[in-house]
Length: 423
Image (cartoon, rainbow, N blue to C red; front, side, top):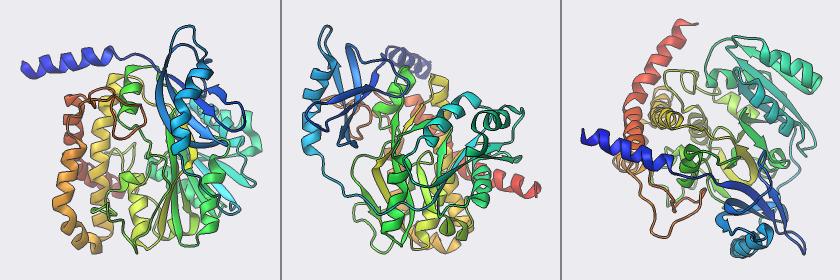
């Protein structure tokens, strides 16, 4: 009874979370330029989640309130001044290589069209887009691609369900030196592909790159809650992870792959990803493992001695899930995917077992911290910041994430058996 009452109270607080506007402010030049986020109306009074750019480059986010009757641009420019001063200039990479973009999708033609429009508007000098239609039940995706995009987008059908299977299908057919992956629920910044792939030209040892993921909209309590606890963003500091020089502040390296990036914004040197066998088909959404395919790819590439680079300049706007039920599914799936990918790594690379066991005590402590009930910070904070929280993280979601972590190894083994039967 007590737990039920507490859950009801958490849901009541959750439903009281108000919407937040999404906007971006570019401080390049004498006068700042304020734009609404992708698909958002012009900024008005109220709370605003703001991406601050300097000379077009993302440098930080903040949460600000525009008073009624005030000029939004003036208020937000003043609020952004500190973010812009604290930003560190970042040098550009080399000429970006020929790239392929793979988008796996299933029965979401409306969202897919929005994503493809943004991908075809990329400033990258030479690239291709491949849509992998995963286990379709209708012809809507094929019809969309052929009718609206013609030869500009290649259509591939993969009848076996599972995100990793779909990504492997795309990997098998791409022509680019670098293969980038994103989701059908994103809007890519015009320079996304250039910023994500240019580091491969500058560093021959680079095997993987990841980028920044920000919320396309914060209209529902679920979207605001998720972003106020970090969302999918990994901050605004470019970071290179080198297995030959492990970071001192990452004692679990490389097994804390969730710190490196997310599957909605990642790229690999094509020959490197093919050499490690691509993604494990028993991981990812659409399988009993629920997720972990992206994390598996990161660790496999690092384990082969290649570097991984995170760049906040490679930006996609992600449409977060919208309901409490979505958050429950996501929390459980995230926990399951986390331990499923670790199981996949040890099954496929048993030589990594000693290193994993050596890190296990700290790993358990990390897992506990990852799923703890998170309160709000005393000073508040902005959605997208990683150590500031505007809303408490519900206990029920923490419990679901822990249950998912317990289930993950079993889910992976079930998915692996199912994949074996399907051969």
